Image (cartoon, rainbow, N blue to C red; front, side):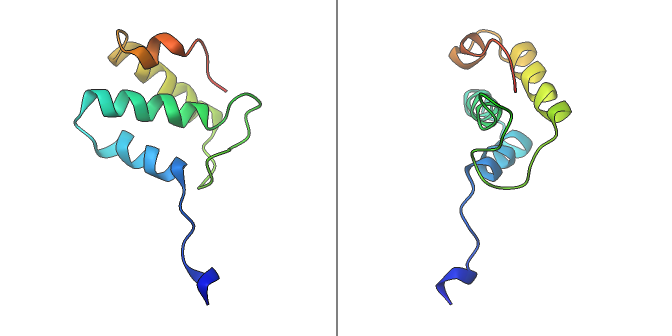
Length: 80
């Protein structure tokens, strides 16, 4: 059945990049996008497995602390 194939999930792609990428620009962008999956109301809009708000806070802190001069850190004033 064509419906038995796994569904593509942007959220899972972002999480994979966050965990495994050594490319700073790519990781900063993935953190930004992963946090924005939950904007503005805290509901996951990117499919995939839900991430607790405490993890999203860790992503936000990582983005702000490790990549403060990136466009992505500057664009994101808070997390959801």
